[in-house]
Image (cartoon, rainbow, N blue to C red; front, side, top):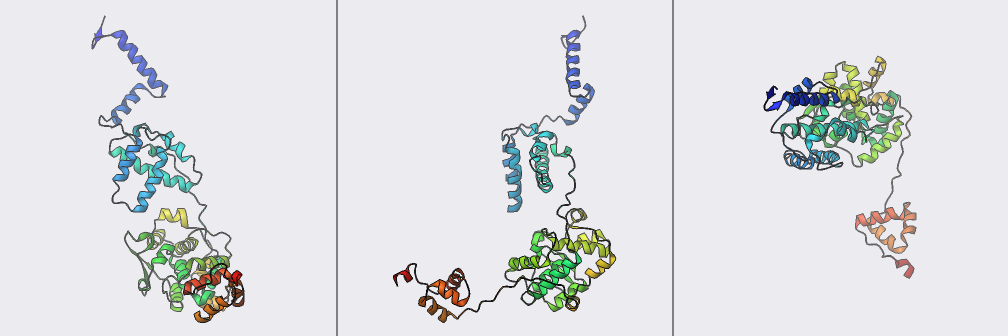
Length: 378
């Protein structure tokens, strides 16, 4: 009887057939299984729980911004929820898919996928797993639901309303967003010194920790800035934008729609996606995924880049701009006397405001008010 390594041939054959049967149960041949082991096996792979790897990963992010760290903390907790003691090398594609299936929103799925992929790349480098299970995730479809731009008529109403609201207090900011494509956060951080003769220097917003950029000032924007010089974000900006949005009567208003509109018309004007992406501090991929729509009519494109204040005044669009009545407040001395002569509700009626508004105004001016129950005792 022949023998190998002290074993009978019968035992060797039986063992070989058992291995072949196990490989076949996984729909692969024994040779393919051995090839996979040879290419993936690493003797230094460490058994580490996902909780310990999570904590170590976060501790290594000393150079991250607080917002980045918060993003990884919240995203990677989804890996801990099923079982924090699960070994990192035990995670499979199906585990990742099961977590992501809870989220119907494509942007949410895309955000979590990026966080998971970064984490598992780190785990592979630290020999906590053999491969990144996220590498085999199917490609997500492009989410086009947030792509929306203002129509030419909506642009006219928005710009004209900005001219009319409080003598054009918001006109410069709206025009910069419309014709230069700056993000709202970038406009918030903009200063008058950043407005140069032929370009705008952008150093704030999402780019405050990255390289600064400059974006050109087209002729139409130069006309707006000539008539409405930029002096910084006006007080009550958010409230002003709510009123302008209402006056625009846009059929669909999404976040950053003014920037979407600008990027769309810039691309159609220049016929150069790379140039548009560069000027707006983004990439072609991000631009086409989130911002850009298609405008086929050359006349519409030309009309947009000629929406100067003079053109809108010559043929003003119909705008229903909600106006607030200005309150003529008495001076401090008269007001202090009035609130002690009669109850707040009666004094407020004389001025034409609510008693709450009157009380707030008195507190702001430091006027002492009668205590509760004063007029009942009288």
